[in-house]
Image 1 (cartoon, helix red, strand yellow):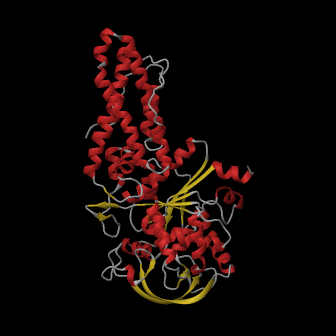
Image 2 (cartoon, rainbow, N blue to C red):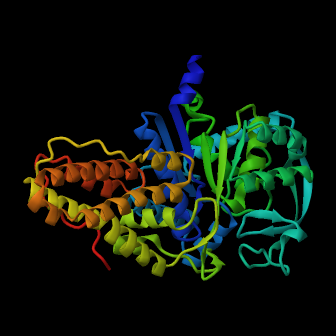
Image 3 (cartoon, rainbow, N blue to C red):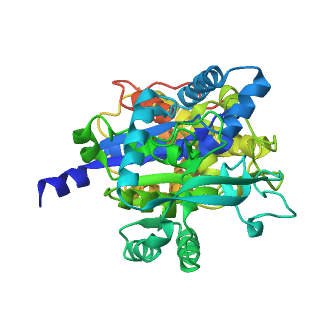
Length: 481
Protein backbone atom coordinates (compact mmCIF):
# COMPACT_ATOMS: atom_id res chain seq x y z
CA UNK A 1 0.00 0.00 0.00
CA UNK A 2 1.41 3.39 -0.99
CA UNK A 3 1.79 6.33 1.35
CA UNK A 4 -0.97 8.23 -0.45
CA UNK A 5 -3.43 5.34 -0.20
CA UNK A 6 -2.68 4.97 3.50
CA UNK A 7 -3.31 8.69 3.92
CA UNK A 8 -6.60 8.48 2.03
CA UNK A 9 -7.70 5.54 4.17
CA UNK A 10 -6.99 7.36 7.42
CA UNK A 11 -8.54 10.76 6.66
CA UNK A 12 -12.18 11.77 6.43
CA UNK A 13 -13.20 15.15 5.04
CA UNK A 14 -16.93 15.83 5.38
CA UNK A 15 -18.78 19.04 4.53
CA UNK A 16 -22.19 20.59 4.89
CA UNK A 17 -23.43 22.95 2.20
CA UNK A 18 -22.64 26.51 3.15
CA UNK A 19 -25.86 28.20 4.15
CA UNK A 20 -27.17 31.47 2.77
CA UNK A 21 -27.44 34.12 5.45
CA UNK A 22 -30.54 35.81 4.06
CA UNK A 23 -32.36 34.17 6.95
CA UNK A 24 -31.54 32.77 10.36
CA UNK A 25 -30.60 29.11 11.00
CA UNK A 26 -33.58 26.74 10.82
CA UNK A 27 -34.37 23.09 11.36
CA UNK A 28 -33.44 22.19 7.78
CA UNK A 29 -29.91 23.57 8.03
CA UNK A 30 -29.57 22.08 11.52
CA UNK A 31 -30.55 18.67 10.11
CA UNK A 32 -27.69 18.56 7.60
CA UNK A 33 -25.19 19.94 10.09
CA UNK A 34 -26.14 17.43 12.79
CA UNK A 35 -25.80 14.56 10.29
CA UNK A 36 -22.32 15.75 9.31
CA UNK A 37 -21.41 16.10 12.98
CA UNK A 38 -22.48 12.51 13.69
CA UNK A 39 -20.30 11.23 10.87
CA UNK A 40 -17.35 13.33 11.99
CA UNK A 41 -17.66 12.01 15.56
CA UNK A 42 -18.03 8.44 14.30
CA UNK A 43 -14.86 8.66 12.21
CA UNK A 44 -12.95 10.32 15.05
CA UNK A 45 -13.92 7.41 17.31
CA UNK A 46 -12.44 5.11 14.65
CA UNK A 47 -9.12 6.94 15.00
CA UNK A 48 -9.24 8.71 11.64
CA UNK A 49 -7.92 12.18 10.84
CA UNK A 50 -11.21 14.06 10.45
CA UNK A 51 -11.87 17.47 8.99
CA UNK A 52 -15.48 18.60 9.36
CA UNK A 53 -16.34 21.81 7.51
CA UNK A 54 -19.35 24.05 8.02
CA UNK A 55 -19.82 27.61 6.88
CA UNK A 56 -21.82 30.37 5.25
CA UNK A 57 -22.53 31.76 1.78
CA UNK A 58 -22.42 35.52 2.20
CA UNK A 59 -22.40 36.93 -1.34
CA UNK A 60 -25.17 37.51 -3.86
CA UNK A 61 -28.20 39.58 -4.72
CA UNK A 62 -30.46 38.05 -2.11
CA UNK A 63 -27.91 38.82 0.61
CA UNK A 64 -27.77 42.43 -0.59
CA UNK A 65 -31.59 42.55 -0.57
CA UNK A 66 -31.77 41.18 2.98
CA UNK A 67 -29.17 43.67 4.19
CA UNK A 68 -31.07 46.53 2.62
CA UNK A 69 -34.32 45.43 4.29
CA UNK A 70 -32.49 45.31 7.62
CA UNK A 71 -31.11 48.80 7.06
CA UNK A 72 -27.52 47.56 7.16
CA UNK A 73 -24.50 47.46 4.89
CA UNK A 74 -24.01 43.95 3.44
CA UNK A 75 -20.84 43.19 5.40
CA UNK A 76 -22.36 44.43 8.63
CA UNK A 77 -25.41 42.29 7.96
CA UNK A 78 -23.48 39.07 7.24
CA UNK A 79 -21.25 39.57 10.28
CA UNK A 80 -24.32 39.61 12.51
CA UNK A 81 -25.81 36.56 10.82
CA UNK A 82 -22.54 34.65 11.17
CA UNK A 83 -22.71 35.15 14.93
CA UNK A 84 -26.22 33.66 14.95
CA UNK A 85 -25.16 30.57 13.02
CA UNK A 86 -22.15 30.03 15.24
CA UNK A 87 -24.31 30.33 18.35
CA UNK A 88 -26.83 27.85 16.97
CA UNK A 89 -24.19 25.26 16.08
CA UNK A 90 -22.62 25.66 19.53
CA UNK A 91 -26.00 25.11 21.19
CA UNK A 92 -26.51 21.95 19.11
CA UNK A 93 -23.07 20.62 20.12
CA UNK A 94 -21.70 20.76 16.57
CA UNK A 95 -18.00 19.83 16.52
CA UNK A 96 -16.89 21.39 13.21
CA UNK A 97 -13.15 21.78 12.70
CA UNK A 98 -13.45 24.62 10.19
CA UNK A 99 -16.08 27.32 9.77
CA UNK A 100 -15.75 29.17 6.50
CA UNK A 101 -17.32 32.42 5.36
CA UNK A 102 -17.17 33.42 1.70
CA UNK A 103 -16.41 37.03 2.67
CA UNK A 104 -13.08 35.97 4.20
CA UNK A 105 -9.90 37.22 2.45
CA UNK A 106 -8.57 33.64 2.19
CA UNK A 107 -11.62 32.71 0.16
CA UNK A 108 -11.33 35.67 -2.20
CA UNK A 109 -7.71 34.68 -2.79
CA UNK A 110 -8.64 31.06 -3.49
CA UNK A 111 -11.50 31.96 -5.85
CA UNK A 112 -9.22 34.29 -7.80
CA UNK A 113 -6.64 31.51 -8.21
CA UNK A 114 -9.38 29.08 -9.23
CA UNK A 115 -10.83 31.38 -11.90
CA UNK A 116 -7.46 32.21 -13.39
CA UNK A 117 -6.69 28.51 -13.68
CA UNK A 118 -10.14 27.90 -15.15
CA UNK A 119 -9.50 30.57 -17.79
CA UNK A 120 -6.13 28.99 -18.61
CA UNK A 121 -7.86 25.62 -19.13
CA UNK A 122 -9.35 26.79 -22.42
CA UNK A 123 -12.81 25.80 -21.20
CA UNK A 124 -14.21 29.33 -20.87
CA UNK A 125 -15.43 31.80 -23.48
CA UNK A 126 -17.43 35.02 -23.77
CA UNK A 127 -21.12 34.76 -24.62
CA UNK A 128 -24.53 36.22 -23.96
CA UNK A 129 -27.23 34.95 -21.64
CA UNK A 130 -30.89 35.77 -22.01
CA UNK A 131 -33.48 34.11 -19.80
CA UNK A 132 -34.92 33.77 -16.32
CA UNK A 133 -32.90 34.21 -13.14
CA UNK A 134 -34.27 33.40 -9.66
CA UNK A 135 -32.65 35.55 -6.98
CA UNK A 136 -33.94 33.15 -4.30
CA UNK A 137 -32.04 30.23 -5.86
CA UNK A 138 -29.30 32.48 -7.26
CA UNK A 139 -29.59 30.38 -10.41
CA UNK A 140 -30.68 30.54 -14.02
CA UNK A 141 -34.01 28.94 -14.87
CA UNK A 142 -35.60 27.45 -17.95
CA UNK A 143 -39.29 27.91 -18.69
CA UNK A 144 -39.77 24.22 -17.87
CA UNK A 145 -38.36 24.82 -14.36
CA UNK A 146 -41.20 27.20 -13.50
CA UNK A 147 -44.69 26.42 -12.21
CA UNK A 148 -47.30 28.94 -13.29
CA UNK A 149 -44.46 31.30 -14.07
CA UNK A 150 -42.99 31.06 -10.56
CA UNK A 151 -39.94 29.38 -9.08
CA UNK A 152 -41.48 26.40 -7.23
CA UNK A 153 -38.87 26.58 -4.45
CA UNK A 154 -39.35 30.25 -3.62
CA UNK A 155 -42.82 31.01 -4.96
CA UNK A 156 -41.60 34.13 -6.73
CA UNK A 157 -41.36 35.21 -10.35
CA UNK A 158 -37.77 35.10 -11.63
CA UNK A 159 -36.19 38.13 -13.25
CA UNK A 160 -35.69 38.22 -17.01
CA UNK A 161 -32.05 39.06 -17.66
CA UNK A 162 -30.02 39.66 -20.78
CA UNK A 163 -26.30 40.19 -20.33
CA UNK A 164 -22.89 39.33 -21.66
CA UNK A 165 -21.07 36.83 -19.46
CA UNK A 166 -18.23 34.40 -19.45
CA UNK A 167 -19.27 30.76 -19.93
CA UNK A 168 -17.82 27.38 -18.95
CA UNK A 169 -17.94 24.50 -21.45
CA UNK A 170 -19.93 22.17 -19.22
CA UNK A 171 -21.20 20.46 -22.40
CA UNK A 172 -17.74 18.87 -22.81
CA UNK A 173 -18.11 16.86 -19.60
CA UNK A 174 -21.31 14.84 -19.97
CA UNK A 175 -19.75 11.53 -20.98
CA UNK A 176 -16.85 11.93 -18.53
CA UNK A 177 -19.14 12.60 -15.57
CA UNK A 178 -21.55 9.81 -16.47
CA UNK A 179 -18.66 7.33 -16.62
CA UNK A 180 -17.22 8.45 -13.29
CA UNK A 181 -20.62 8.17 -11.59
CA UNK A 182 -21.33 4.76 -13.09
CA UNK A 183 -17.96 3.29 -12.16
CA UNK A 184 -18.18 4.67 -8.61
CA UNK A 185 -15.36 7.21 -8.78
CA UNK A 186 -18.04 9.76 -7.92
CA UNK A 187 -20.68 8.19 -5.67
CA UNK A 188 -24.10 9.84 -5.70
CA UNK A 189 -26.55 8.76 -3.01
CA UNK A 190 -29.32 7.80 -2.45
CA UNK A 191 -29.85 5.74 -5.61
CA UNK A 192 -32.83 7.83 -6.68
CA UNK A 193 -30.62 10.93 -6.76
CA UNK A 194 -27.94 9.03 -8.71
CA UNK A 195 -30.51 8.06 -11.31
CA UNK A 196 -31.76 11.64 -11.43
CA UNK A 197 -28.27 12.97 -12.09
CA UNK A 198 -27.52 10.39 -14.77
CA UNK A 199 -30.87 11.14 -16.45
CA UNK A 200 -30.10 14.86 -16.46
CA UNK A 201 -26.67 14.22 -18.00
CA UNK A 202 -28.20 11.95 -20.66
CA UNK A 203 -30.42 14.81 -21.82
CA UNK A 204 -27.29 16.74 -22.78
CA UNK A 205 -25.44 19.33 -20.74
CA UNK A 206 -25.47 23.00 -21.68
CA UNK A 207 -22.67 25.46 -21.07
CA UNK A 208 -23.15 27.64 -18.00
CA UNK A 209 -22.45 31.28 -17.20
CA UNK A 210 -19.64 31.68 -14.67
CA UNK A 211 -19.90 35.45 -14.30
CA UNK A 212 -22.57 38.11 -13.89
CA UNK A 213 -22.72 41.70 -15.02
CA UNK A 214 -25.50 42.89 -12.73
CA UNK A 215 -24.74 41.09 -9.44
CA UNK A 216 -24.63 42.95 -6.14
CA UNK A 217 -22.20 42.21 -3.30
CA UNK A 218 -20.10 39.71 -5.24
CA UNK A 219 -16.43 38.90 -5.83
CA UNK A 220 -14.89 40.57 -8.88
CA UNK A 221 -13.91 38.45 -11.84
CA UNK A 222 -10.08 38.39 -11.96
CA UNK A 223 -10.28 39.68 -15.52
CA UNK A 224 -12.89 42.11 -16.87
CA UNK A 225 -13.79 44.91 -14.45
CA UNK A 226 -17.48 44.91 -15.40
CA UNK A 227 -17.98 41.26 -14.38
CA UNK A 228 -18.39 39.50 -11.03
CA UNK A 229 -18.00 35.85 -10.12
CA UNK A 230 -21.26 33.90 -10.41
CA UNK A 231 -22.19 33.38 -6.78
CA UNK A 232 -22.70 29.61 -7.02
CA UNK A 233 -19.13 29.07 -8.23
CA UNK A 234 -17.90 31.33 -5.45
CA UNK A 235 -19.80 29.17 -2.96
CA UNK A 236 -18.80 25.79 -4.35
CA UNK A 237 -15.12 26.61 -4.13
CA UNK A 238 -15.39 27.02 -0.35
CA UNK A 239 -14.71 23.29 -0.03
CA UNK A 240 -11.25 23.84 -1.52
CA UNK A 241 -10.53 27.15 0.22
CA UNK A 242 -11.05 25.57 3.64
CA UNK A 243 -8.26 23.03 3.15
CA UNK A 244 -5.72 25.50 1.77
CA UNK A 245 -6.09 25.56 -2.02
CA UNK A 246 -4.46 28.98 -2.42
CA UNK A 247 -2.10 29.08 0.56
CA UNK A 248 -1.29 25.59 1.88
CA UNK A 249 -0.89 23.01 -0.87
CA UNK A 250 0.43 20.38 1.54
CA UNK A 251 -2.74 20.59 3.62
CA UNK A 252 -4.87 20.64 0.49
CA UNK A 253 -3.25 17.46 -0.81
CA UNK A 254 -3.72 15.86 2.61
CA UNK A 255 -7.50 16.30 2.70
CA UNK A 256 -8.61 16.70 -0.91
CA UNK A 257 -10.72 15.25 -2.45
CA UNK A 258 -13.61 15.62 -0.04
CA UNK A 259 -14.85 12.22 1.12
CA UNK A 260 -18.45 13.35 1.47
CA UNK A 261 -20.51 16.41 0.60
CA UNK A 262 -23.87 16.45 2.40
CA UNK A 263 -26.41 18.54 0.47
CA UNK A 264 -30.13 19.03 0.01
CA UNK A 265 -31.67 17.38 -3.01
CA UNK A 266 -32.45 20.77 -4.59
CA UNK A 267 -28.77 21.50 -5.22
CA UNK A 268 -27.56 18.18 -6.63
CA UNK A 269 -27.08 19.62 -10.13
CA UNK A 270 -24.54 22.07 -8.76
CA UNK A 271 -22.74 19.49 -6.60
CA UNK A 272 -22.94 16.37 -8.77
CA UNK A 273 -22.47 17.90 -12.22
CA UNK A 274 -21.16 21.47 -12.28
CA UNK A 275 -18.78 21.13 -9.31
CA UNK A 276 -17.00 17.93 -10.45
CA UNK A 277 -16.70 19.29 -14.01
CA UNK A 278 -15.08 22.51 -12.78
CA UNK A 279 -12.61 20.53 -10.67
CA UNK A 280 -11.69 18.32 -13.59
CA UNK A 281 -11.18 21.42 -15.75
CA UNK A 282 -8.57 22.81 -13.35
CA UNK A 283 -6.86 19.45 -12.90
CA UNK A 284 -8.19 18.55 -9.45
CA UNK A 285 -9.98 15.39 -8.34
CA UNK A 286 -13.78 15.46 -7.96
CA UNK A 287 -15.38 14.75 -4.56
CA UNK A 288 -15.62 11.07 -3.69
CA UNK A 289 -19.28 11.09 -2.66
CA UNK A 290 -22.31 13.36 -2.54
CA UNK A 291 -25.34 12.45 -0.44
CA UNK A 292 -28.53 14.43 -1.04
CA UNK A 293 -31.03 14.30 1.79
CA UNK A 294 -34.73 15.11 1.55
CA UNK A 295 -36.72 18.11 2.71
CA UNK A 296 -38.57 18.73 5.90
CA UNK A 297 -42.13 19.86 5.48
CA UNK A 298 -44.38 21.71 7.88
CA UNK A 299 -48.04 20.95 7.38
CA UNK A 300 -47.12 19.26 4.11
CA UNK A 301 -45.31 22.33 2.73
CA UNK A 302 -41.53 22.51 2.25
CA UNK A 303 -39.84 24.64 4.87
CA UNK A 304 -38.29 27.75 3.41
CA UNK A 305 -36.90 31.00 4.74
CA UNK A 306 -38.61 32.69 1.82
CA UNK A 307 -42.00 31.18 2.69
CA UNK A 308 -41.55 31.98 6.38
CA UNK A 309 -42.60 28.57 7.73
CA UNK A 310 -39.28 27.55 9.26
CA UNK A 311 -38.73 26.16 12.76
CA UNK A 312 -36.10 27.77 14.98
CA UNK A 313 -33.78 25.03 16.31
CA UNK A 314 -32.66 27.27 19.16
CA UNK A 315 -36.19 27.39 20.57
CA UNK A 316 -36.39 23.59 20.61
CA UNK A 317 -32.88 23.25 22.02
CA UNK A 318 -33.65 25.60 24.90
CA UNK A 319 -36.83 23.65 25.68
CA UNK A 320 -35.76 20.03 25.14
CA UNK A 321 -31.95 20.06 25.08
CA UNK A 322 -29.50 19.57 22.23
CA UNK A 323 -29.37 15.76 22.43
CA UNK A 324 -33.15 15.47 22.22
CA UNK A 325 -33.25 17.67 19.11
CA UNK A 326 -30.39 15.74 17.52
CA UNK A 327 -32.14 12.45 18.29
CA UNK A 328 -35.52 13.58 16.99
CA UNK A 329 -34.30 14.96 13.67
CA UNK A 330 -32.30 11.84 12.80
CA UNK A 331 -34.88 9.38 14.13
CA UNK A 332 -38.08 10.91 12.78
CA UNK A 333 -37.22 10.93 9.06
CA UNK A 334 -34.99 8.37 7.30
CA UNK A 335 -32.02 10.30 5.93
CA UNK A 336 -32.50 10.88 2.22
CA UNK A 337 -36.30 10.98 2.36
CA UNK A 338 -38.77 13.82 2.80
CA UNK A 339 -40.68 14.02 6.06
CA UNK A 340 -42.98 16.22 8.06
CA UNK A 341 -41.79 17.52 11.44
CA UNK A 342 -43.58 19.44 14.15
CA UNK A 343 -43.22 20.21 17.83
CA UNK A 344 -46.06 17.77 18.53
CA UNK A 345 -43.99 14.98 17.01
CA UNK A 346 -40.94 16.21 18.87
CA UNK A 347 -42.82 16.03 22.17
CA UNK A 348 -44.06 12.50 21.42
CA UNK A 349 -40.51 11.26 20.78
CA UNK A 350 -39.19 13.11 23.81
CA UNK A 351 -41.69 11.64 26.26
CA UNK A 352 -41.87 8.20 24.68
CA UNK A 353 -38.41 7.26 23.38
CA UNK A 354 -36.28 9.43 25.65
CA UNK A 355 -38.03 9.93 29.00
CA UNK A 356 -39.96 6.64 29.17
CA UNK A 357 -37.42 4.60 27.20
CA UNK A 358 -33.74 5.42 27.67
CA UNK A 359 -34.26 7.73 30.65
CA UNK A 360 -36.41 5.20 32.50
CA UNK A 361 -33.90 2.38 31.92
CA UNK A 362 -31.03 4.51 33.20
CA UNK A 363 -32.86 5.68 36.33
CA UNK A 364 -34.24 2.33 37.42
CA UNK A 365 -31.02 0.47 36.64
CA UNK A 366 -28.77 2.82 38.65
CA UNK A 367 -31.34 2.73 41.46
CA UNK A 368 -31.37 -1.08 41.60
CA UNK A 369 -27.57 -1.39 41.39
CA UNK A 370 -27.26 0.98 44.35
CA UNK A 371 -30.06 -0.73 46.28
CA UNK A 372 -29.31 -4.41 45.66
CA UNK A 373 -25.54 -4.34 45.04
CA UNK A 374 -24.44 -1.39 47.16
CA UNK A 375 -23.45 0.30 43.87
CA UNK A 376 -20.66 -2.20 43.30
CA UNK A 377 -20.41 -3.54 39.75
CA UNK A 378 -16.80 -4.75 39.79
CA UNK A 379 -16.99 -6.07 36.26
CA UNK A 380 -19.59 -6.18 33.53
CA UNK A 381 -20.90 -9.53 32.41
CA UNK A 382 -20.60 -9.59 28.64
CA UNK A 383 -23.99 -9.18 27.05
CA UNK A 384 -25.07 -11.57 24.35
CA UNK A 385 -26.88 -8.81 22.50
CA UNK A 386 -25.10 -7.52 19.38
CA UNK A 387 -25.26 -3.74 19.04
CA UNK A 388 -22.63 -3.44 16.30
CA UNK A 389 -25.41 -2.94 13.77
CA UNK A 390 -26.20 0.40 15.39
CA UNK A 391 -22.88 2.00 14.43
CA UNK A 392 -22.80 0.15 11.10
CA UNK A 393 -26.12 1.80 10.25
CA UNK A 394 -24.79 5.23 11.20
CA UNK A 395 -21.78 4.67 8.91
CA UNK A 396 -24.18 3.97 6.04
CA UNK A 397 -26.06 7.20 6.87
CA UNK A 398 -29.02 5.13 8.01
CA UNK A 399 -29.34 7.12 11.21
CA UNK A 400 -32.99 6.24 11.78
CA UNK A 401 -32.27 2.53 11.27
CA UNK A 402 -29.41 2.60 13.76
CA UNK A 403 -31.54 4.38 16.34
CA UNK A 404 -34.32 1.85 15.87
CA UNK A 405 -31.83 -0.93 16.66
CA UNK A 406 -30.59 0.91 19.75
CA UNK A 407 -34.12 1.43 21.03
CA UNK A 408 -34.96 -2.22 20.42
CA UNK A 409 -32.19 -3.00 22.91
CA UNK A 410 -33.51 -0.38 25.31
CA UNK A 411 -37.01 -1.83 25.07
CA UNK A 412 -35.63 -5.36 25.54
CA UNK A 413 -33.75 -4.26 28.68
CA UNK A 414 -36.79 -2.51 30.15
CA UNK A 415 -38.97 -5.54 29.44
CA UNK A 416 -36.40 -7.87 31.00
CA UNK A 417 -36.57 -5.80 34.19
CA UNK A 418 -40.36 -5.85 34.13
CA UNK A 419 -40.48 -9.62 33.58
CA UNK A 420 -37.70 -10.50 36.04
CA UNK A 421 -38.93 -8.22 38.85
CA UNK A 422 -35.53 -7.85 40.58
CA UNK A 423 -37.20 -6.16 43.56
CA UNK A 424 -38.98 -9.47 44.26
CA UNK A 425 -36.30 -11.86 43.00
CA UNK A 426 -33.76 -10.31 45.34
CA UNK A 427 -35.63 -11.81 48.32
CA UNK A 428 -35.08 -15.39 47.09
CA UNK A 429 -32.07 -15.32 44.75
CA UNK A 430 -29.83 -12.26 45.26
CA UNK A 431 -26.99 -13.80 43.20
CA UNK A 432 -29.26 -14.06 40.16
CA UNK A 433 -30.25 -10.43 40.59
CA UNK A 434 -26.58 -9.41 40.64
CA UNK A 435 -25.88 -11.33 37.43
CA UNK A 436 -28.97 -9.80 35.79
CA UNK A 437 -28.02 -6.26 36.77
CA UNK A 438 -24.42 -6.71 35.63
CA UNK A 439 -25.70 -7.84 32.25
CA UNK A 440 -28.01 -4.85 32.04
CA UNK A 441 -25.23 -2.44 33.00
CA UNK A 442 -23.15 -3.95 30.18
CA UNK A 443 -26.00 -3.50 27.72
CA UNK A 444 -26.66 0.10 28.73
CA UNK A 445 -22.96 0.96 28.69
CA UNK A 446 -22.71 -0.45 25.16
CA UNK A 447 -25.79 1.50 24.08
CA UNK A 448 -24.24 4.69 25.45
CA UNK A 449 -21.06 4.07 23.46
CA UNK A 450 -23.06 3.51 20.27
CA UNK A 451 -25.15 6.63 20.81
CA UNK A 452 -22.16 8.90 21.48
CA UNK A 453 -22.00 10.40 17.96
CA UNK A 454 -25.70 11.33 18.01
CA UNK A 455 -26.25 12.11 21.71
CA UNK A 456 -22.81 13.04 23.06
CA UNK A 457 -23.92 14.70 26.30
CA UNK A 458 -26.35 11.90 27.21
CA UNK A 459 -23.75 9.27 26.35
CA UNK A 460 -21.21 10.95 28.62
CA UNK A 461 -23.68 11.12 31.52
CA UNK A 462 -24.50 7.42 31.24
CA UNK A 463 -20.92 6.29 30.93
CA UNK A 464 -19.68 8.47 33.80
CA UNK A 465 -22.44 7.08 36.05
CA UNK A 466 -21.82 3.44 35.11
CA UNK A 467 -18.02 3.71 35.26
CA UNK A 468 -18.02 5.23 38.74
CA UNK A 469 -16.45 3.27 41.58
CA UNK A 470 -19.86 3.20 43.24
CA UNK A 471 -22.99 3.47 41.09
CA UNK A 472 -25.70 5.55 42.72
CA UNK A 473 -29.23 6.34 41.68
CA UNK A 474 -28.88 8.97 38.98
CA UNK A 475 -30.90 12.04 38.19
CA UNK A 476 -33.27 11.55 35.26
CA UNK A 477 -31.74 12.11 31.86
CA UNK A 478 -34.97 13.55 30.49
CA UNK A 479 -37.78 15.13 32.47
CA UNK A 480 -41.12 14.25 30.98
CA UNK A 481 -42.82 17.28 29.44
